[in-house]
Figure 1 (cartoon, one colour):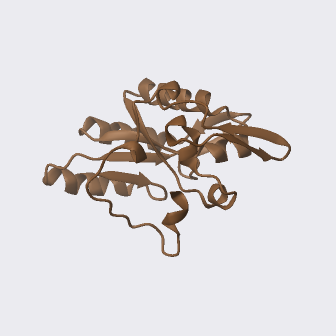
Figure 2 (figure 1 turned 135 degrees about the vertical axis):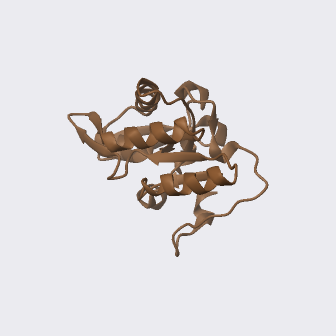
Amino acid sequence: LRHDSDSHPEKALAMAKIESEFGIRSTYFFLHSAKYYGSVKNSVMIRNSILDKLAKKLFDKGFEIGIHRDLFTMMWDYQFDPIGFIKEEIDYYKSIGVTVTGTAAHGNMNTINTGLNEMWIFSEFGKSGYYVNKGKKYFYGKNSVKDFGLEYEAYLLKRKVHLSDIAAGFNAQKLN
């Protein structure tokens, strides 16, 4: 199971407790552009220490931790290099004893409204080009999942069932 922890990461522990009782193994993806995650100061991500404890606790209980990717936001708002940023995130989690191997694209409406899709960051999705924001070019689709230091992207995995509690009014068709 995949859980995108966009708003209330502490609820992950409650869900993990239920899943543990039923022997379910799942992945919790934490969103680096969410308010709970931390803040950016002088081009440095300052992570909330509560999240460290949460990620470590889930990981130690046998759950996978992943990066819920919102790289267009991180590029546009904070001028982060996407490859460097993801590698820094992986290294950060590693420093607290959590192995991260996967990522999942976040459906940020600001990105979708530009006609872009977060999945296009990776070359495996077959889209490439650039987008100009505030006079600066932001490239996408030039690098593979592995170039980012990851083993997989969730939308590239084969699945039998897709259930979602996505917000009402959101047009999932725009993601395809």
